[in-house]
Image 1 (tube, rainbow, N blue to C red):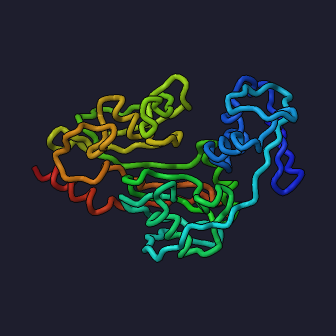
Image 2 (cartoon, rainbow, N blue to C red):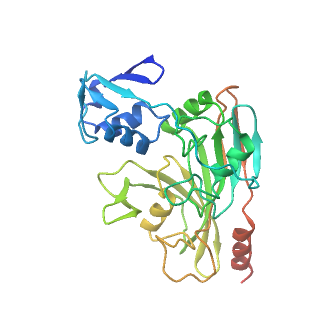
Image 3 (tube, rainbow, N blue to C red):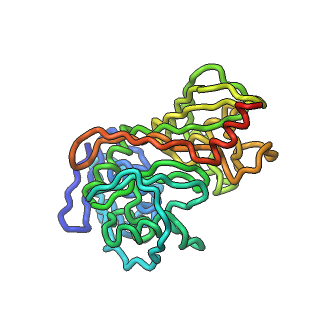
Length: 312
């Protein structure tokens, strides 16, 4: 286990263990500091906020045992994103966190060129200043994400304490996340896709299976065979990578119905995105220590297609 000493409020010292030798610096930091996103840590490296043995290095630097790594976390900037009075479907809320049911079509957090109408904008209006600051000014409270056109449950952190604890649970893959999807083709038996994922070097908007990617594991189980050669499927995440279920199901020739990136170009229904719903979310409450599980019904647009495929 790496040694970590927060000698100052925003100054972290790390020393890799022998088994961590050879990891890229950004990958090592992502594992050592799960409360921060990998992209945020990569940005710190690029800005010279990370040093190894008192020297500035690149993200590709390979960690060595007994390296002395210093990470400086800048003070949170003044948030310039506006709070918006957007209705939220709140499943649970207390002083440390809340669980929300995100609708299809809503982006989780602002990004360049898209600063309004997001879940964060709505959360800022609902929670005011009561959102964790760990993931920076663009993602207050956000400890994990789901795609814009995927619906379902997200846990949002109000306190930094809750954020750090839940980030560790996500890093240890102990969070329960079960999705429901309608997939192309007939799926007869349950199975597991264990295939590493990385950004497609030819198209940064796509994720691809790559030997150089991060390990990704999806367990799937058919729930019901539908008409027109579709199957209702349950997918349980062991890891949580970008587009994981979408890429994994497409890789075994069962892409998700309506997926505009990894599915067929022609869709038999007028859909605005993939029929994928995060319906179950479970974790250990970071303050009470209680195991909690939340569920969400399939949204109306999903149920409508499902009923049509059952009737035919």
